[in-house]
Each structure stands twice: as C-alpha cells, then as structure tokens.
Amino acid sequence: MKLIDISMTLSKETPNWPGDTPFHYEIAWPMAESGSVNVGKIEASTHIGTHIDAPFHYDDAGQKTDELDLNRYFAKAAVIDCTGLSEIKKDHINFKGEAVTAVLFKTCAWQNRQVFPESIPVLGTEVPAYLKEQGINLIGVDLPSVDHLESKELPVHHALYAQHINILEGIVLDEVEAGMYQLIAMPLKIKGGDGSPVRAVLISEK
Ligand SMILES: Nc1ccccc1C(=O)C[C@H](N)C(=O)O
Ligand SMILES: [Zn+2]
Ligand SMILES: [Zn+2]
Image (cartoon, rainbow, N blue to C red):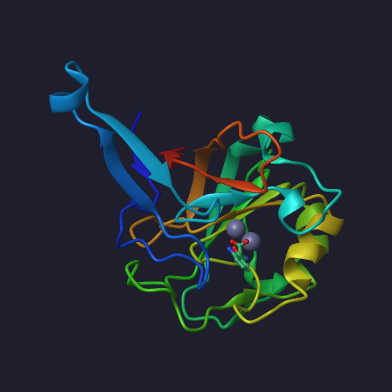
C-alpha cells in the first residue's frame, strides 16, 4: 500500500489568501530554555495551504469544523484530469467505479505554490447538482478556491452547499494520474471552526 502525499508544505513561503493571516511557525520554547524539549508555536489562517472549508465559512448557520462527518474525508475518490480548462463543465466529468463519493479536479493551474495565483479555473454552476446525482459529497481542487478569486458572492461554494457537497482546496495533483483512489484528508477538531488545514493523502486503487 503506497501513500501519495497531495498536501502543500506549510512554511513562511506558503502563500496566504491576500490580506489573510500568513503561516508562522517558531520554536517558542527551545531546549536550551526548557531543559528537555523543543516546543513550537503556530499561527495561520484556517484556509492556509491544503485545507477544508467547513460550511460555517460561507454560512453563519453552517456546520463547524468540529461537527463535520469524518466519513466524507475518508472516501473513494475519482481524480479527473481537467488540465487547460478555464471552466469545468459537467461533460468533463466522467468516472467509472462504484461507491465513489469524492471527485478531485486536477487542473494543474497553480504551478508555483510559493505565489498566490492571479486567476484560476472554476467549476460551472451546473456541476454541483450533477455531482449530487452521482452520489458525490466531497469535491477537491488543486486551487485556493472553487470560485473566481475576486468573487464575493461565491456562487460555486453556495451551489455545492445547496447540494450538501463539502469542499477541499489546495491539494497537489501534478504528479497524480487520473483514476480511482482512496482519499484521507482529516480536519483538525477545532471547536467552532470555519475550516482546517489537512494532511491529504491518496492510496492508489491499482
Ligand atoms: N481566507 C479568505 C479571506 C478572505 C476572503 C476569502 C478567503 C478564502 O479563504 C476564500 C477561499 N474560497 C477559501 O475558502 O479558501
Ligand atoms: Zn478555504
Ligand atoms: Zn473555499
């Protein structure tokens, strides 16, 4: 069984959403002071790097990070190659395989992970209803958002939410072939949270 890491590295080079809290790590209590151990301290937006959005991120009444159903993040997942598309339409979505509950879109549109992208491909607003019909309850993108970066209305976030589909953002799929995998991407149990960084991995079904 081979794990494929599809997570971004968290460091001071990890680009944050413009204006949001950057990632910061420091050794707050070095061994020389504590006498026994190095102890670190972290600060960051909950939407840093590879992360999930809790529905509370886009709806005040939505589910919080600690209330999420973890089954969704331990899922049979189809990776779909959408390289070069500026809008992903439902015709691009073809996967075979039973009991698939997650679809991961490989766009390869965010190559340099040390810089926040200027523009990104988006999902067509008809895609969520189609995915729901296929039994999907989680989608993932190799991008910092499922909507246009300037969007304030977040039509795709809301269209997914209306279909009870959760969102995983910032995965790295450049080296991953289209096909079927087991996905594991567990959010931290942050009480009242609006999202969480995750360590996302795939296990090949082959
Ligand atoms: N961190 C932010 C700060 C301000 C405005 C949006 C964001 C976002 O994170 C939006 C993005 N669609 C996201 O869910 O990750
Ligand atoms: Zn997010
Ligand atoms: Zn989002």
